[in-house]
Image (cartoon, rainbow, N blue to C red):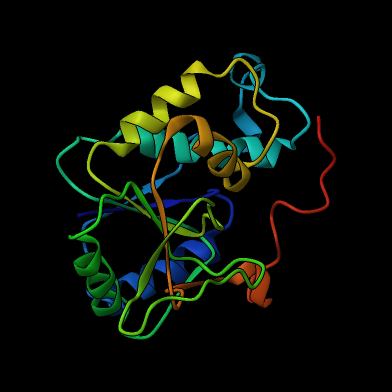
Length: 204
């Protein structure tokens, strides 16, 4: 299992905060995605996008960098840099993944977002849905990153940020989404721990 953190490099406080959390959770096999910062995006990188902000483009491209790293032989866990991990995070994640072993699944969305929740059967921690959830944390099954990267390449224009992008590509891709209940990660920019780096910017 490999862990990735999408990170906007000027926000050093966020990096320190999540490194501390990963250490507390006993997670060592992680990598920060620090390319594709909004300040250095090229015209070629921007031409595929419309109606979303440069910050949203930057974040989406950081997730795409994760997709490109998929080796097809390990699970991929993705955090955004404002993620706040729940207590006993690793044990709770392992419990969710254990239940998914009997399921045909592609992506597990574990992050808190807009109070979006679902009811699960007694004793269950995961549920199949047709919808994505926020991207402050999700898990990709083996090889799914490559499928997502191919979907990204196939699109001539992208008009939605990464969380909505996951939702939009699902019907035609047949990707199988699950949610964890309860969620395993809160979003620091929603709780007030961090100022949002995405909101308040006009689309380009």
